Length: 391
Image (cartoon, rainbow, N blue to C red; front, side, top):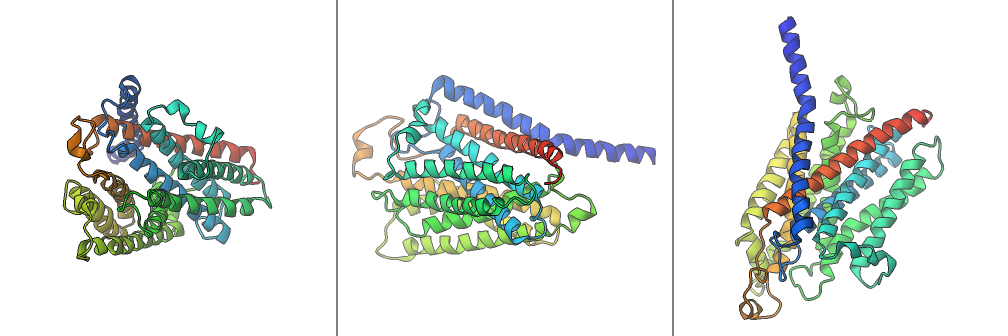
């Protein structure tokens, strides 16, 4: 009996240590990638002059989607009084996760820039006819609303909390949709000029928000998450599972409508679609996005085994990351000026893109940073809850 108890304790210690080991690995690998980026600039990156946006911008759009989806689900559940969402501690957890997802996204944009020190010029001297300037101001407005909602959640019976949650929810719905409009505004690119793209980004944001919230329900690190028998009866799990499944299903329906026109219309000839579905990026679309992120994720989420829901949610996030790259990269590989690819020859002047090891390493750092912010935010939630117990 004593030996069995030691075995159980050892397994419990290993489960507690495993997340820290994974985080430490991501952080160290990512830190080396950031050092390479700062030391050697863009020399080690796989993007170039013809394809200037790569993995980091794909992760940026993924982080923005997670942030918007998490906030709108968390705020909506709190306002509507859904079981598992109605406590202020649960709302604060969603706000922290939303901010922890969007801050690394900004880091990805900063590292992608050739002159990152000029990043704030878009705030000092904006031109609101630019979609980039509009998005930058909208993100800052959202962060302000999220911060105010977080503070009001500690004030018992605050009359300001729900109005600001509604306003923050409006921004959290708006900026995932605006990510699609950001592409649609590029008039010279036929692949991105689709009225469905903004709807696709919004549907994926809802699915990503449900998946991210579902993942953290399996990581009991604060009073907001039930454990033991209470975890098995947690009503939030079932609701988040349905939200994630519904978001994936809606996304696939619109995605099918988008690509079916290009594939079956005899008058349509899109090298971008051919590149994604049958060219160099076929494995990103068919294997990572469809097989892993849709079929396997939905299969795990559809089972009655709740432990598989955690895996299904992770696969869904991975699949939507591939979907973001499936929008970003194919839209840049078809030259807009005929003959340009043959006119100049240089490793940086090619209509092709594959992420390098340095780019993946920086991506690991972005993930580690998001996890760190979420952990620190949860610790701060606990400290503030002790200071304001009436909340």
